[in-house]
Length: 457
Ligand code: ZN
Image 1 (tube, protein in one colour):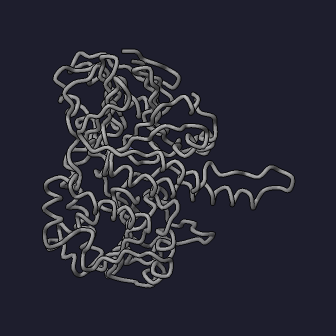
Image 2: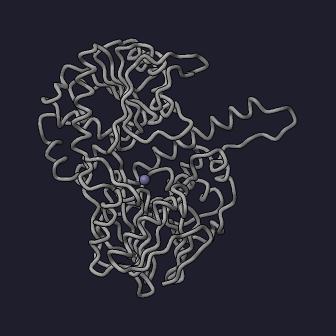
């Protein structure tokens, strides 16, 4: 068995690894490179292998940095099955169609500015490419071990990162390979904890927070309650920029769970994100893979996705009418870094009001409007207008969807015998720190993967 590393090896986006086993070539994830303009442009490059030579793609979960180049792979000749856990397979078209729409509108904008005589700019892929790729998707339940080719078995287990997220176990040539995809934190609301795995000969492990410890979750949730209370007393609205998958649903879950304590019935709650609304419908179909606490909450008096004062907006007109309300409304809208999406027009209108509160619940990358607000900007530019920031800006940490160093170490401790490790999906400082901890505690060989490298077991 051989593994070739082609992406998310020394960085955190563009996950893509080729496994050669039983005479077949499997691709683990097909992620998009994200972040800088340069990274985004490199998505147009040819794949470092012939897409037609891949026999099957195996997906760990539906985040774009793990699946975003799939339509490109099928456009360029991949004909085999795309294997995914059931909920992942349902989130997949939502994520990819959103990505295709962004690609299409980016290309359209560039073409409008194009000088006469220069070649037309084509999108990375289109919504039609997504529809074609989706025809190749085959679903698999958690924990079932199936034979995908003669002598090659596949098993998904819950990775506790987002709905449907899976660790991937591939068995063949007498060896067991485990790929973590992204691992979640224990006690993440709604999701089950990452499931331990008994045996592996080689482990490809993510290391995003290999050098960090997260803030305590209880403290974080209490902080959200305090912010909501302060906002109510100020008579303003609360704006929460959040990505469509995971965080938006978690917020609704906390509102349901703390319904009485936070006096939630006094608010109007608006989920102003058509994409998050679609994701809520997928969550709602998959209660069976929720953790025990969430299953109880779903059966209790307040279903997080059907709160009596929850409005899920569909049309732009509905969104605009929310924009006119000046107090008593909690608005959850994308995107999570306020670099686009409906949250922009809410911020434009409400940042000037001293009664408004803005709550950031996720990472804010350099260069985004979210980052400027978190860094305390007095004025920001939105839609070519200068907007004075009089609103109160809050940053709530500790809600990461990734396990921290302690979480990664704890999950690794679930193997009966510590397997050899190759660290992927992390910057070098994080990987080096985690490698140090693993070899110190378990005396195990740990390598850091770089693009173009291979390992054999
Ligand atoms: Zn992820």
